[in-house]
View (cartoon, rainbow over the protein chains, first blue to last red):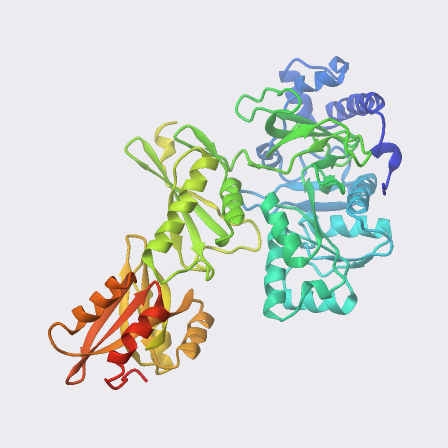
Length: 437
Length: 138
């Protein structure tokens, strides 16, 4: 078994807890003195740094949200003087004003360290050729993987995203063994390879390091089959550090979260209450070691669960389940929680349509109507109406059993649903919910 | 005789049929027979053309979902009762007709396109009678 940092990755959990508490107390002391935003929030909660006596006391600390970052745009949450910030990144700002994050030299070291763990667990070594097809720039994906890969000693091919034909040519010419990009881009690359008449099995590609968007087990199987590789899930977000927060080991039974740097909690997204171990809920992370822009209890909006049981790989770090969806992407339809990812997984399991879909929610009287648009593909298309209607019924029945709420399925033409290089808009909610608020 | 029929998936929104026909028109493809099946959500347009394989590729390249499959084409004497005789024979042989479309063309004959569940057997049964009349599709 390969580890990048065996001491930290396999540390006995009690010892890890002591280490985390020490880091947490230093962190709280630091943000209390250096970040007025946190001092105000703690004072409002009647809380002093010395009140944090145990790890459980973390639940007394205030949450930080994306809105807090916007309100303090651009540098209001920085905890060090500007000269100590050596790198600035920002989120895309697709859902509002961009959120800005800053790193000190030490922070960049932490980032490279956790990315090196991620890559090592995925089987990347100093013998690998890794093609980084995540975007470079303000987005943390490209540079995050890049620095981690250099620390591991791999040969890095920094292509950035886009220009798929060139990606594929470089991949074959340079003998790329590892590909890092979003999982949907990996499928697009596979599709393009077929169109170019290139057999993925004939390339040197062995592993894919995929993240930056939620994806399902079914999608993993499809990527592994189409590209003939092992597909590894990684997790991260710029607010915490970027990619490298958590990553899969060869057991593929959840993503080991680097708890010595990032302290995770699972909360009920509605009440904010901390849930018992093993519960499904929203992931909240406190950055234990970051200097530039530390985060107290950052609400990631990502829904997952944590598994503290020992892993066959020997790592003792907690495993988070594949992200099941976003708490802000969750639809409540006739009282039932529905996630777009559930629809994706049904479609991929059935394999008779494309994985492109859209959910439309409307309200008729007091009843929510869910319509799922699904692109028909050539394999399932028939010249007989009843066969297509059968397909609609079959998808609807499968969706009903998975979603626990009925949905109307509507077949649409291929490539008619919006494609996006970033995050696809999967949900159109036409209910006028403001009336009820 | 057995011929290739091209089917195209049509989304139920204005202009989709025109999009298909435009592709064919630009390449001077002449449609010899055509039918549209529709539901509330989508339609399937099926047609008979010359050079069906080329037309299939043409439409696929234009981004449509296309299917090519075998159907049975019969040319009948354009007289009362001639279709009935054929359909009765299929029914008595236990062959199911999935759908059909028909048109009268020329002077003395009519043509009908059948989708059946056992095309080889149906063609064998009906071929003799159908063969008398000249082919007009290609």
